[in-house]
Image (cartoon, rainbow, N blue to C red):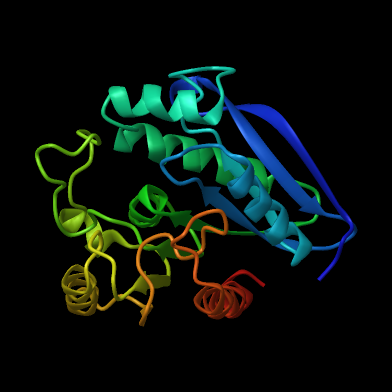
Length: 246
């Protein structure tokens, strides 16, 4: 672990050449694998930027696109997230294009070893699976991503979201899934369905479901935070990315 890193915000070309805001953290003086971080539904906030820096402190290049750059450029995370929800969420095609741009940006950094993984939380967990089924990546982590194997209910604000079942056979890399036994989206039944589908497609994956935890157990600012579970989850992430991105 190192405290020597460079963190900054920049702008790159995302899907369809649109300018998107990207928060980046790079470890100094090392060769590194990289992680594209996908933020949760609340958006491009301080908590998720801290996760980007955490990856850099552990020796990874990391970058997170502001997925709401188009809906509300320059707005606060709360206002940008509200604007995105009002439009039904981030379209899948656009998400894939933005993650592809972030992956290319990370690979272009001096010191990159060319390997890129992806990780996402909540809505970003589903989007991490989507990206791994749509792009050539080296590892993917799904942190309690909902609506991977089921469609959202009709009254859900993310109207652009649908199940990823038809494309799971295209998963390009090993997948780590971290879930809470008390969660409803995804429920234990839904994660077991995902397990069965990945097994059917002969994909490499490992799932961990934690008792006593629900949704957003990594979120330190929420009542849902479970410190012991979060520590165990981070240790699994370090081991997983260490094996696949080094």
